[in-house]
View 1 (spheres, helix red, strand yellow):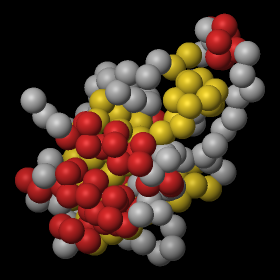
View 2 (cartoon, rainbow, N blue to C red; view 1 turned 120 degrees about the vertical axis):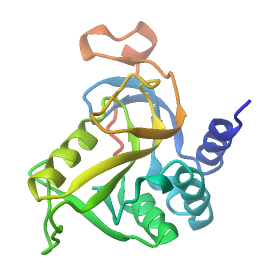
View 3 (cartoon, rainbow, N blue to C red; view 1 turned 180 degrees about the horizontal axis):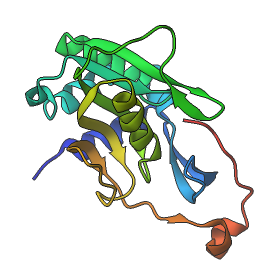
Length: 189
């Protein structure tokens, strides 16, 4: 039996990064659970361990660059790149859309890994894949720490997650009574 998801959840719990309450996710869905990866990223030993675990799934893609969508993929993406000896760059939000800025450039066909912290529907990853292609890169794989979709989210390139979880999510007009009684917050990743 694979103990990796248990270790990942323990890292989140020990860091105070697995929150309970009423949260509005970036996807717009509501949930009683929230993964606040910024709490984990305070502790470089935990970031290093998560990157070690995720890297095992990514070494065979022959990538030259790691791309982290802002904000979630920045710290873990940079650590993956460091461990793999690859270049790291990031996409940042401009008017809530990802952009390649700061004079970053890709070589034509440059093979990139996209690294994200948590996905629910995978919107930022899809946006990152598209943005990399627009700038001439070839996305070859995706690495994610936590997949809240239970593996239901797919991309047109291979992806790997350290933990697939089944915390339910709800549309705002379909909240269960116990969640509707709590004031929702948007804590940020």
